[in-house]
Length: 356
Image (cartoon, rainbow, N blue to C red; front, side, top):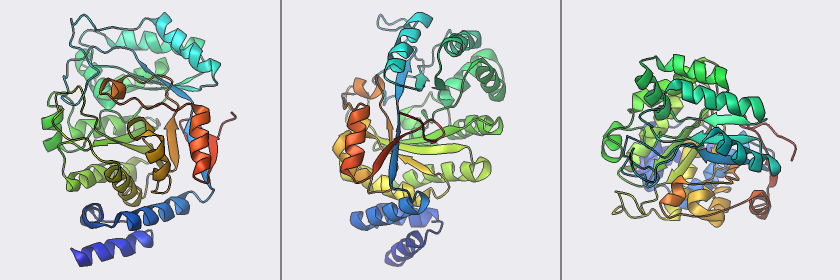
């Protein structure tokens, strides 16, 4: 292991591509301070300008009704439960108007796997938004899209194309959790497979759409399986170049069926962030998770390979349902960025600078 780790250090310092074994060696045996230094050097090599970006965005969960019953989720309600809801167009509109009042430019639009909503319902919702509001719709996880395709008996590519024509701009990486089927069978046995998640993003990329990739870790996976997840992302990025960013966060066990899993400590988040920056040499942007880690840890991550502070998230329902309730507005994000010696810069979904 010592020789493998030394070789991994050398290749990381030289900005060379790491193998799966080398990535696993770094994550398993690497010194945290060395990993942070190597990842920061890689980040500055990829982004020489001393800037950290963020976006003014609102999360809108259009429904909490879901038939996948994921064990890690405290947000969903089973169809028929008295707490299920489906937002009306007008309710969504009011949320967007509140976003626009603070200079927001994007909504993250996601929901559960509702058993009864047809594709036409989603198209109508998107048309309502796009006809009225100047926002990008960053919407629907790969499992949501696959769910709609199955309900309609249509190819995934057809569903994406129709959603795009109705107003969908980009697709978030949610639903990735851990791109290892052994793990998925434990935490979300009714949800989509690894290959199906990859196929949705591949189909979107082939249509010219950009998407993000995510990883939720700190539960049933091994350290080597975290690298396996990154490898699947890296392989598709080699093929399509369609991912704009990688976003990783730690599992929040409270109020979930997986409450017995211990909450991962912050240093493990930082180590994994650093290794992901070193391993994902073809994904330009790495996003902090202040939503699960809080501002202080997110600030430290800016010296561990991270170059983006994510979103202001005017509304957050999924992580908070699991008992984690950190909050940062635009000024708060900018203060955190400046405290770390960087210049804050607002961006859009494509990581292009926008006027604040």
